[in-house]
Amino acid sequence: MKIMVPVKLVPDLVENLEVAQDGSELDRDSVRLILSEPDEHALEQALLLKKQNDEITVVAPGVLEAENVLFVASAKGADRLIKLTNSFGKGFNCHALARALGGIATELHPDLILTGVQAHDDLDGSLGPLLAGFLDLPYVGNVAGISAANGRATVRKEYSGGLIAEMDISLPAVVGIVAAEEPPRYVAVSKVRQSAKTAIVEPYPVGELDPSGGIELDRMYKPEIVERATMIEGTVEQIAARLIEILKELDIF
Image (cartoon, rainbow, N blue to C red; front, side, top):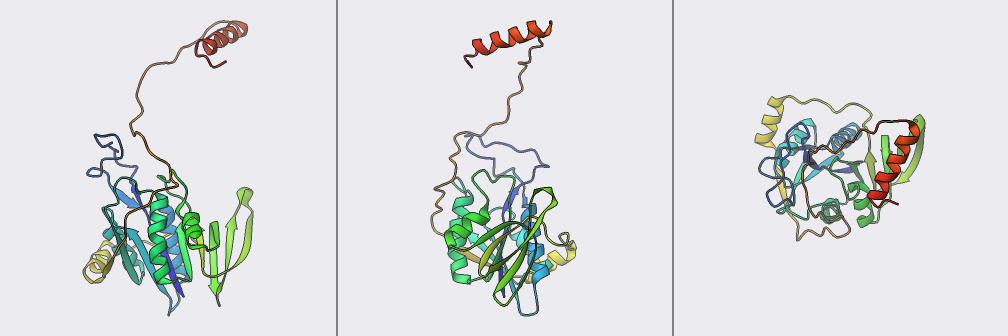
């Protein structure tokens, strides 16, 4: 079975995020990118599914830190590493990435595509359902366990309230992983360094990115710190009357 795991790199929220001078995006020279946590669970689930003759291909957009993420995936047990090559600058969103991944998925013909269900910079939709739509494949999201054999897969989908449903799907398919059946495995730095010396990252050029369908970002800025709080004192009736006056002044009604 061939398993494809598209991964996404997102800004590390532990670091201070700086906005570029033109206000159109984050400052790419200062931002630190890390693997999106749900994608880490998708990779772990792929490794748990892997049998002797299975092949796991990890695909990452060619942004800063992409090769490090791919080398870590190799050290964990991924068989093939592919880096999409493009500028991935302005206009790079989930729609554009899904279209780029659709091209390579058509060439690889994976039996199963595992993605994370979300990322903290997904403002225009999750990658999994978009990719499934472009490939005309079935999609199941919020999955916390999966088994596959003989061209079919059984997925365990989580619902609110602790409910879990088992669904039987035909392959190929795209599955969004919310949590792997086991925590993502730790890999030693020495093993990652060894992987960096021996593993091969295959470049895959993609054409002009097509971000259509996603949101259009006009301006990015940090929240302004101002003092606009007004404490209203008095009886309940007086406070209510003052609130109504303020709402009328603001033309809210």
